[in-house]
Image (cartoon, rainbow, N blue to C red; front, side, top):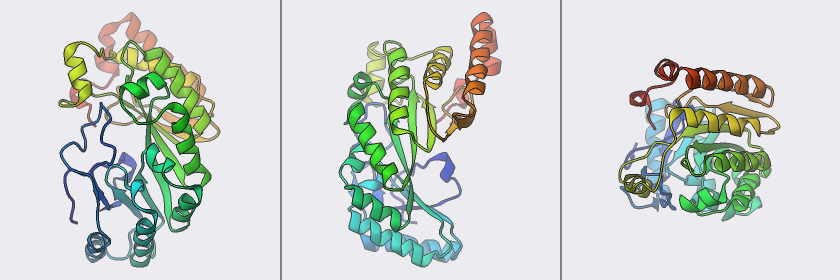
Length: 298
């Protein structure tokens, strides 16, 4: 399929056709991320993308229903080029229901609302975006490239265009020093964004990243599994979302929980409270109740 490098996709795109429209990540500067450090960013040419689509049609026929445009932030593509790709996908796969991609906050800020609306009208139905934190101190430390106000603006623009938004946040990203502020401020930003989908991940320190070097020097102190659950509970308690599908089932997480917010908020908080209480009183239960480190993954 003409893939270059390792292809990363959201768990929910496991059954989607993946077309690599860009290579790497145009920002590629977040201190915690090592996904794209082995490759130089570029936007693939229309001819390259056409070849991938034609090959996919030969392999899978016309019955593809979902397509995910890789790589790290395909939303950064020039709008005209992305529209051509979306139109070609619809032509080759007439049963296509949804096209999705990763996008960064700077990508959304770099497009006008009318451009995003055009992309929606041509078939881009879902964008996955890493909010990571709502704490300006944390956002600056991890070099996300935007502050919390810009993050809210970027996310709201996507939603206002008609495109659905799925956001991720990273539990433990503030370390022990900023854990409470990270939870509280992230909830504040999420409430302002009001996304349709929300998926917390738990920090895994990747060797070779700037964050890993901070960790080795002792400058960054990661949370314990119990502290991570407390941070998650603190965040959920403060969420006031309109209608959001919440999934905490990523392989990096210690405890899989999920539901729809606000309907299932009390149940999730109650579950977390019980688990926290049990592990606090009997630490040996952690191994039985939480995902062990060797089973965690990105």
